[in-house]
Image 1: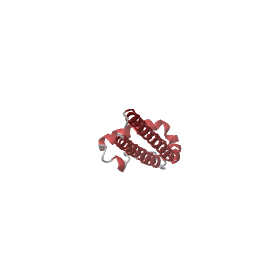
Image 2 (image 1 turned 90 degrees about the vertical axis):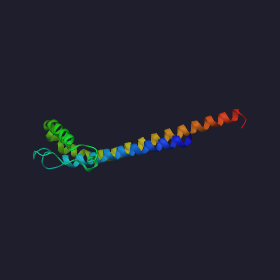
Image 3 (image 1 turned 135 degrees about the vertical axis):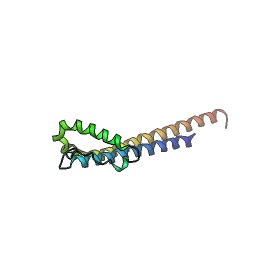
Length: 129
């Protein structure tokens, strides 16, 4: 039972790490786009899809999402460089959140391990083993 607890905790930790790594890469990519001298859609072209999404997302879907985002960002175009600068501190914040989430997973797995150990000790002592 204890091995299962740590195996599930490990799988959750790997998934959490992957999610945070993807978030950090996408934030850095978006920050680079936002800090460009020209507005994102000024040339009338769709920005290239980040390499991390290439295997997961259809290019037509990407173009539709970017088109919707460009339409939304037209109203806040003067704020875009400031938003791009904000990613400079948002990416480290993602890794702080990763560390806190991993700590919660570790505490949860250790607590479950302790509870299983306590219960097995209690059962063994009540049977005289």
